[in-house]
Image (cartoon, rainbow, N blue to C red; front, side, top):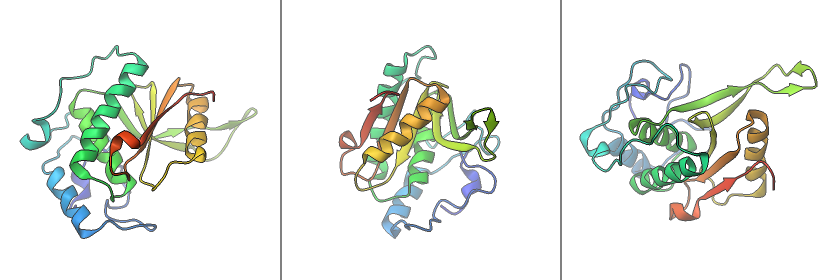
Length: 193
């Protein structure tokens, strides 16, 4: 991606999409990313309203998701969109690329998506100086954690449970895009085991 400022779900000061200290995408993966996200425009960084995509990107898009969708139905909808994103991009890219693509695809369907959501953490009556950042909050009721790892672990689920406890949301999705088939790469997570 040559111009990361063209992507609507990036924040000012974020590293470029191809940067990553732990793992760099292959040239084939970057080329696939460039083909998938051809024309993305938006008002300001971090704003998901007014997102438009190239004709080939929206041709397969189902209708808009209803605003009053129950959280279980919303999670099913998000999983379906994640499967579409995975089928277009394939495994092997960075987590941030998948999160951006998923956010763009959901916003294009009329779903309210917030990325890198700061969440205050309290210890007793004291607010800790650093805010935690959720990968994605969908419709203010579904926590989505995006991963690109070989295998999901119990630690990943515990992380989502902590997010659910802090945000008081009732359901979370753990999406792992580094799998051959996305049907093997998601878990629904509830606040209690």
